[in-house]
Image: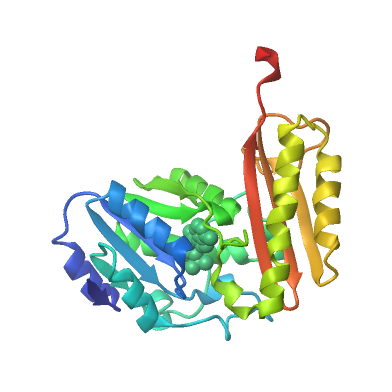
Length: 285
Ligand code: AMP
């Protein structure tokens, strides 16, 4: 497993790599969620490249850039158990040689859901992912459905900018109590960690309503809202029931692909989770 921290050295190494190349971009503090992406890349691609880089442009003022967990050696130990050909570990001077700045790419999904709560976030994400795509030149890139909107935006960016990359979605990996794995879970105290299990319970309850034929998005939201609110420690940012295709909030009856997503704070820790559901085609019933 090669470890490279400069673009120059990476490009030199990359020249000699042939066959399909799976790329897993991460911000480190790796957990089973990240590793499932690596494993999927191992299954699909002949080569796997992982990047670890905490991207400053996707953190807004007052967010956790300075405290974001960093544990590079532990990350490398975890990755060494997989078939990882190279870990790319650039610093800010490599990724932003002309200062911390964002690119021009824009997309109508930038300002809704996560983007509404975190202005500038997707500008930062697409800036760094585009830079990494240009350096790594993968054939496949793996993204977790935990960040469903991010996955949609990257897929759209790949199409808009004509990257020849297959963007592969990977399912959400959860802790035993149902909490979606996240590097930010490290911020949680033991009792917050137990409380956080309620998020999954609320989503499961919402999913059950859908399976039972509920077509009223407001009712679905209320159900999820109430279950989360039963834990006073949560501050809810949003509960959304949106189209899984356009990510636009549903008005009226639910149909087609549905994305149910939530964002909330537990103390200062921001947690997100979601599920997608395809409603049965009523015309075929
Ligand atoms: P991050 O290091 O948080 O930027 O995440 C890197 C990649 O791992 C992104 O594509 C995430 O969506 C994905 N990821 C993070 N947590 C999970 C999880 N619990 N299950 C699946 N993928 C995840």
